[in-house]
Image (cartoon, rainbow, N blue to C red):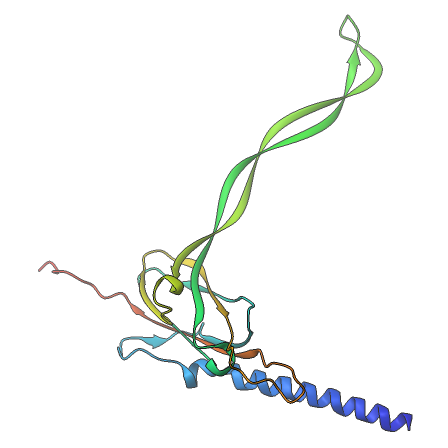
Length: 206
């Protein structure tokens, strides 16, 4: 009987693992099959495009590098049945900002006599000094909650930098629960990144 129970437990674990792997595989190329590529043929898909499973209410971010002299188009597709009709998207630059921090230190110093000679004893002396430290701050470059919940944005990059594409899904309030009563709150999100050299505008000198 114990052998049978162990076999059932092992089989259940394999089934859970299989479902998880299948879900990951299903999401792997979500941006390729469900994305909304630009109609402008000058754009080409960027290798940093990616898809993943996202849980309702939990922020997920994709860190990418954008390069100077390139135009970018970033579009997000998602499983509306699970994640809801709208999904919040932000483009954020994380900047290291320097500032001076006052640090208090306690050091042991020798006690001197009236002639300025060490007495053989010491005392605690508190000192303060400035120390340069860096703190990471977020600079929001674009937020779709201020742009009619748009799922795509185009921009020109004037300086190479690291940015994060942040997404968070509110979920579908009308989603039907599973047979066991649980709500399916994990769905696929695809982030399609396209790029092209920034076109030269204006009159060129002859």
